[in-house]
Image (cartoon, rainbow, N blue to C red; front, side):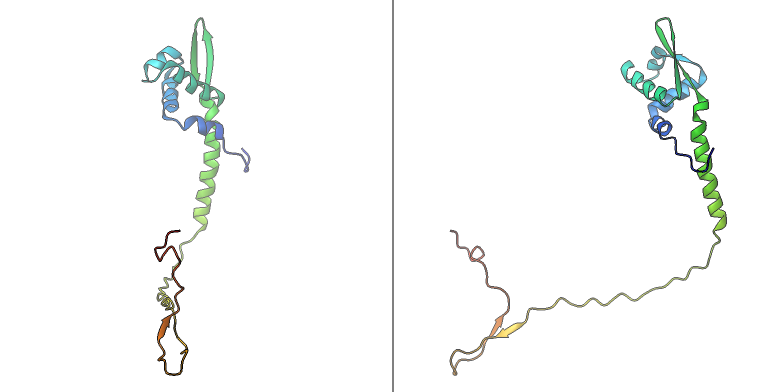
Length: 153
């Protein structure tokens, strides 16, 4: 197996369903006709046939017609690419783990940054229209809109 082999996605997809895994466990014992497989599950025969079609397209199951029956058999040798790919990944992970030496880790605790308070709106002083008028503080907030004032047009 080459170093740059692709993962056998079709095999993993076929094995990603518990019903299909259970079918393989039954077929591991002996080749079995569809009607016997159907009795082992609480799903319909067409549903079992769909699962068998997925397993067959992945190469994990072989179909043989015997008279009016279709007998299915498990092909364990077809799992070899999946096992090889997993071994390749596991070996690479083990080699990488062996290279890494534990180092002392320095923990740095920083003081939390000071967050400035949001700016308060400035209060502007109104300019007197007449000399005798007192100056009042006026909020710099925008004037309310017509809809905020309650006018309906």
